[in-house]
Length: 165
Image (tube, rainbow, N blue to C red; front, side, top):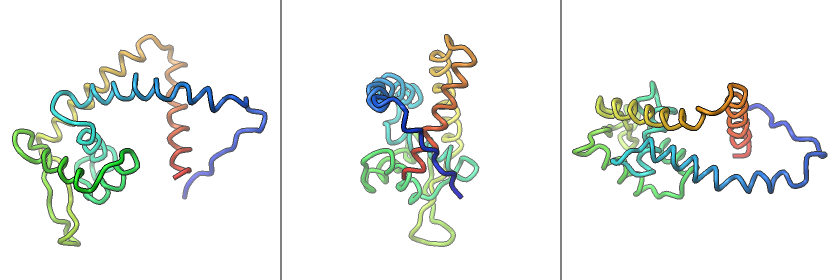
């Protein structure tokens, strides 16, 4: 059951949306892409790091996820073809990376399950560590109140976007 999105009162500033919009690209590119770059390191592309994040955050035990689920979730973040997803997964499963294996699902020979290898688990831990270090640099000069407000804002935006989908 999903939570209803609370509507703002009509008296909200008429230019509030434009003011938010003016921050969108600076936040997306100055912060978001730089966090992503810190996490992916030198070995992976943007789609690959997103796939690993999906396995970690949405997968069973943070280790395994159906390939179709990756396609569904990644498609909400990027314009990406099924073939490009397959290519990204296969390249992470091949040497020298060896981060993933691709197996048939027990319930269907056509459905595939993407599973982190031991090397993949180590890589994801390091990836999260790099992201953590970068974000620590961002929040180092913030007060606890500012950090809590920022977390609350991101949580609310995420909830609202989920409701819009």
